[in-house]
Amino acid sequence: MESGKYDFMTTGKRISLDIGTKIHLEIEGVAIPLESYMVGMEPDNYIILKTPRPYPTIKQKLYQGNQCIVKYIFQGTVFAFQTKIIDSISQPFRLLFLEYPKIIQHHDLRDYRRIDCVIPARIVVKDEEKMAAVVDVSKRGCRVQIQIYPGDRVPSIVINDEVSLWAKFPGVEGDLEIHGRVRNIRKSRHEMVLGVVYQEIPREAQEKIAEYLLSVEELFKNRTGG
Image 1 (cartoon, rainbow, N blue to C red):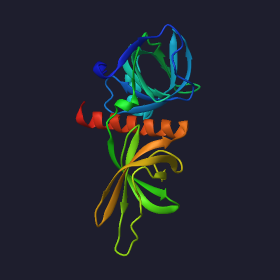
Image 2 (image 1 turned 45 degrees about the vertical axis):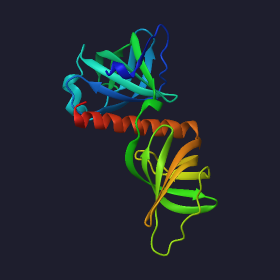
Image 3 (image 1 turned 90 degrees about the horizontal axis):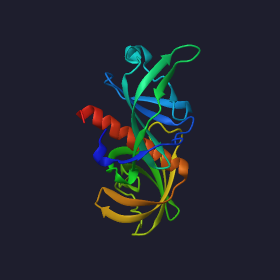
Image 4 (image 1 turned 90 degrees about the vertical axis):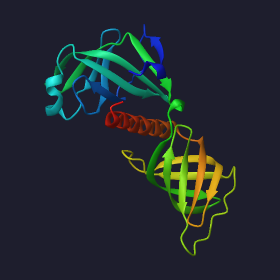
């Protein structure tokens, strides 16, 4: 793991990992990123995950002692630890047993760089709704692009205006609702780009954005061999 980006802590008690938490899993010898869910644990002894898919591709690597890296998000912080496989079972359910970690690394998602993207969205400013796109996103804010077509009325948006945003993040059911304030504006004949800082954002939305950031970071790292 990239220890330079993380703070370390020893456990000594139950780690911050709840049943149903989404897990990003790296298994030694498996080239593709994997996702799983935590289904149980016995503190200081083992953690139980749902065996990730595609099972036929990875089953030969699920042997006792193989190394793994586990990453997950809890209250806006990324936690990561190295561990080993204890065992895997396929009956009555496919489950993966991992050694309980002795050391956990963690860092706040505020350290994440902005992620370029194109996410369809609707934005409302001063009771006026426009179709838009989120063109980059971070833990603290995002950049929103509004296309201006011939004959369109240009929205009268100024710095510190409150905005409401509904965005269709990949992997999230329905629209994610975000409220924020405009911090910067860039205009041209064809578009308006708003820098938005989150102001009011539900915990669930925070977690969804954090999951998206972590997923993209993992995908980028695997594609570049980082």
